[in-house]
Length: 132
Image (cartoon, rainbow, N blue to C red):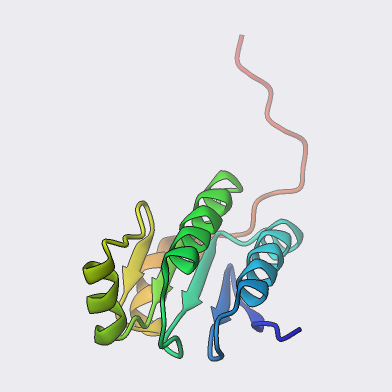
């Protein structure tokens, strides 16, 4: 099965989708991102879709659900590199990415995530005690 490479960039993971997006590829990507966020303790995820030619309702739903799950794990998600053709098709199909930030490019996505990307990783020490 073909996989999307996930690369760490400081406190950000970059997943660059440069292949045909099949159901198996997108499910594997979701699993990999969720796993890597836990393992690496990153605070941001960029999903670069600049190589995607077809963005259907299933892909829209999986990306949205993945971003929601990542948010629950304290990681922000930005979808970057959407082509004008994909954007028009999504609008024509009534698709949206609710709650998911978008960026024109990888550089733009990293600027959006900059406060998270530049923050130190979360401490592995004991949880603070509530004040009494």
